[in-house]
Image (tube, rainbow, N blue to C red; front, top):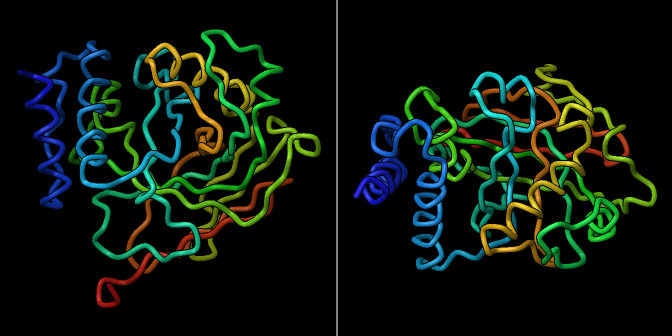
Length: 261
């Protein structure tokens, strides 16, 4: 079956550390439903090995990236506990083709278990926000991806890092934030909250509706990564990534050198 073959191809890339060919040749360029079935199969495989779901990530929140891939909505992936590298250095060789994005992490204090939550309900469900880095990674060689490829590949999830600061939405307006991302002290990316679907809370609203439609609604305690506030930047062993997000503070990640792994 194409879905099984696609899952096997992506799993083999993860296990071997060698990126694979795109999976759109197996699934069809427009079959996003099949791509999400591959994603579910790969996530279930990791859950069976002992991982635990900690939340979701939202991708394709930039209008420019949507245009590039020919889509008109975001996608999502599943966050697992073994992806959380908050406060820990990232071992060399753990990722295949990593890139860093600065984002807002929403930590939920209430379930979002309805098919059409209001914007007010979504906002009220957020216990707090924090600065975050998503280290995206593609199992597809050369990042040669379409929407189907990235969805099947768990929305190109790699790792995530949360900052120490926690801010409630009473004192923080996500769409008004500004972001600066540095690699080894050099500025590599900047952006704003409004670059994320006009407001990162719009992205959270989209995910709440979509997750419910998939039969797996968002739950209290889960982390939701908003989607990038600016362009992503490639990272390599030995790099240190640091982001400043106004109103939320800072978040950093260190990638170990190969001889330190």
